Image (cartoon, rainbow, N blue to C red; front, side):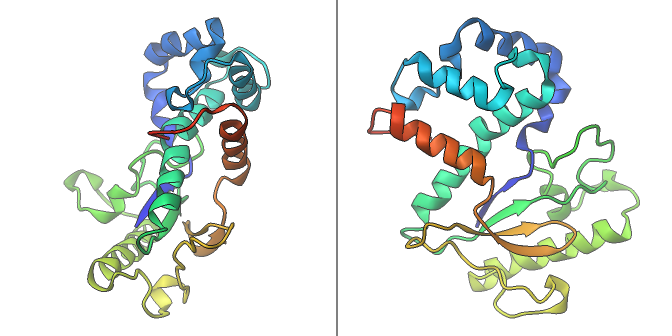
Length: 216
């Protein structure tokens, strides 16, 4: 079981002042956008990445751009690639956690679920205080999914009301589509998370990358 949250890099807002100085270097040197593992210094790749995330504007002028890039570069792209590779050898269940609850982040300033928020629903924390009815329901769903996987190697061995009578399908390594479960207020079996960004990076690696790639 492996997954991503809807906006993994929201934590950047908490370190904006320090990170803005770091990300300012991206505007000064376009090659900074290029992942090291692409094994290229071709500036065309850097310009395409900047265009994709900023539409050509200064990187640090919009914190949302920084968050999207940080989310995809550090979490979404590598995690989805890992899930795809691992699924060829072992049954792999992929999730996308999109539920924006107070339990995950009491004082939410930006839209999107930050890195690690799902853990607040899986483990007890004495600092949680009073939990809303909906947050508690999501907690029950996550605990059931995770405990089912631990016991049966399958998060939904049977349909049940608590889990919205849904079956979470594993990734099919022989299909071009990627099965995943979106965990929001409801459980929604879906295909191809973050498809637009995934396609962008796949095409970029095919066009400008120089294999072999040791990381993603």
